Image (cartoon, rainbow, N blue to C red; front, side, top):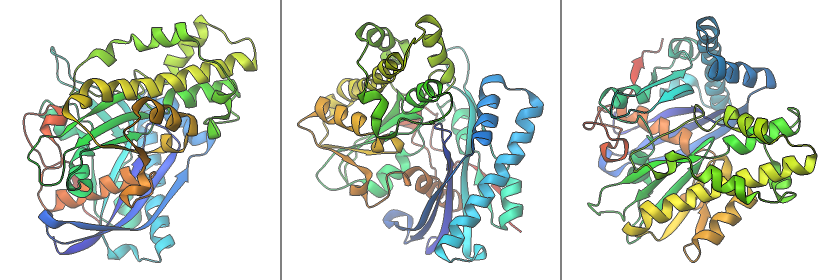
Length: 384
């Protein structure tokens, strides 16, 4: 099994923008793993699909969640088949699919109770439609062991992206934002990884509200660049208790989602397009500040040599400029320096975690999640 095989990674993230699918070829033994992304694509959600997911997150309800679980399975299966078609690869040549599914609720553990998490996207449907075995439900085992269930990319970050002589901060900006400090290759330093807070979710939500659903994200930061920062609101947002909590820590749309923005709007109703642009500018600066503050507070004492940004946030020019200005003289790059499309990294991660599951290898990093120990992640649904 460790000699190499194809795997597909499927990711439907907190941005609610669609399904990312990566077809990956792994070769070599676990201690010298090599990878190649043979194909990658993003299948955007329609407005109707986004509304179904958003309704499940905000309003819940057993009938809606039940049906969405099956529907997401169909959508994820189609993305897996489409990435095979893109690469002209027969599905039967793919050994496994690693499907993250769509998070609809995530409750981190507290001192009083364990955490819980729920990702939808029926693995039986994916296996039935594709004929390929599916590893899914990756976060649950870490949480059962007392962990945060997030972030789960640090294992991949160290396995595939550590380099000699340099400590890297790998910063992902999806709907939420998370970082991994990867020590130099060969170092026995522990990993540091945690969610820094909101990524694109608040900016996207404000953009949708400002445009009555006409835009799902602030393309090229056009709206934010047209606005001015509300300093009083910015300081109020930065006072949220999540940012003072020490790692390990995780968060989600339950905290930093559309309702968060709706509460701001209810208290400070925008009266014009200019007011909306001011709000989007403020939320963009807020997102950048929470990332750079986290790096300065928790990572800088350990030392780091470069920051590499992946996820949709890497395409936001204002967000990237703010990160570069705040972290100067440390260089800030996008994910292309890793040899991977910045949007593809998390799909690659879940292909790798499925590979780890089939090899019986733990995929969590206890010092990052707070779990009681290393665990093999995910549950296997056999293919046809």
